[in-house]
Each structure stands twice: as C-alpha cells, then as structure tokens.
Image (cartoon, rainbow, N blue to C red):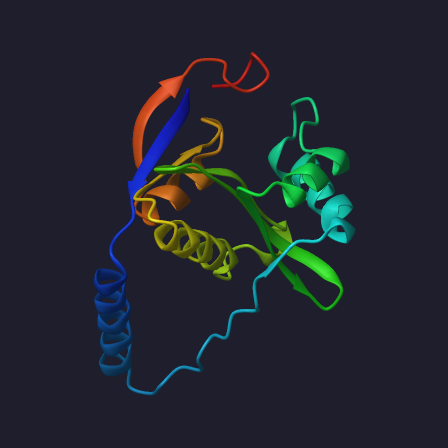
Length: 178
C-alpha cells in the first residue's frame, strides 16, 4: 500500500528553537565535543545534471518499474518555472537529488533520492529542509509526498521528518505496487 503523507511546515521561529535545543542538548550531553558535521552545498540542477539525476532515479528509486524520470523529463522539470530540482553534487558526482513542485497553497515532493553509498549522512534531511524552506518562503504550508509501500526505510525517513501517513493508494506505481 502506497502511503501518501502530508506535513504542515513549522514556522521558521519554531524550527529555529528546535535546532537550537538540539545543539544545546548535544553540547551538554557529551564528555567531549564531537566534530561538527558540515553538509555539502545544495544547488539548483542544470541541464548538464539531467543524465545523472535520471540514472539515480532509475537505479535507486524506480527499480522494478517503467523508467519515468528519463533525462528528457528531468530536463523539462529543471526548466519548469514552478519546480525546483535541487542537488548535492560533490567532487564531480551526484550524491543526492530532490524535486519539488510548488502550487499556490500546496507543494509536492516529487522525487527524493540519495546514492546508496551516501545514505545515512544527512543528505536527504538536508535536501528536504532546503526544499521546505523554499515552500515556506512561497507561503505554502503543506507538502505532499508519496513513497512506495515496499520501502520501509523511506516511510521511516519521512516520518522522522514530521510527515504523516494520510492514506494508501492501491497499485499507484505502475499499476502493480502500492
């Protein structure tokens, strides 16, 4: 069953309080201060990134389905005025991508993918936070996202980011996968 999740975006003030609390907690709960994790920069994709984005989608997100996010489709999304295609590109390689479509009152996280070798390093959270900030700046207070029911890691990831399961759409992906 394919969960549909929605998230109300917290105000910047609430997010700032949460971040400050976490930093304060980490600082006082350790005997020695751990090194600070510096996340790589996020930038908007260009047409030159389309092949790498499409390959990441095909190999890591769309496995078992017909390839939907081809280089041509990704290029069209990059050019679309109400879509952000944000990437983390380090040392000549694509590490992560997030594609967000913005409506008047609701945004849709269309695609989020992190290279398998780069997972559990905070890149997905970093991209989602960046895209949420763009939505908040645009006055949007809700983001919808879908993920495959056969991907418990993605479901847990989105829940950890504050998203809630709203329902299940039977056979949403390729008429076969919930």
